[in-house]
Image 1 (cartoon, rainbow, N blue to C red):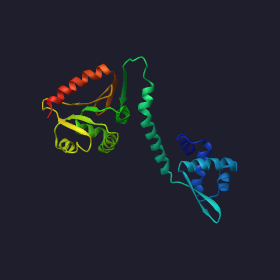
Image 2: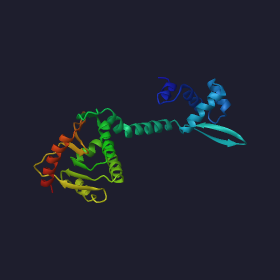
Image 3: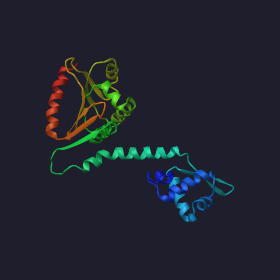
Length: 243
């Protein structure tokens, strides 16, 4: 694939891609140099440079009343891609909500793979309701990553969302429980005879059930108050048995 096409696929016009590549090869340059290199009218080259500057892909300095343009390190393209991906990820709960019917029927959404499963956490924050969780904590951390969970816990605390968590007792979860007060959590250890092989979250009117299958982790999120109420009863029963 041509390099210009790669840049265009990141959301830039052909002119903007041409100008960025020209600036990379020219180094410090005047707008007239860019226009000549790309064979674009000066006004078109300037418009492209201004857009690239707005996105942090071009910068300038002034020396003896002349403006010199410099292309940013290409690594900035990856940063922009990550920023856009994050913006879409944060919007996913609202986008998913638009797909729901307005006739009160339950909705079911399937999430395949770790990155899609992580979107459930954004939905929890957007729902703004306390969370009930049954989680094999160490297996869960291996799936989503400790850095991701640390960020989510911080976000949950900022949103004042409390969670009641049932998890197996291990040295790791003992340390986790010691931080309950500052992390808005109430942790209990599951009975020894209660095997927890999947992760379950109950929040708002929703229930999320996550298979931790190593080949293809999969989650099902059901938006239905009756199912939520039934599984909440099971959660409360297990909560009473947990220590």
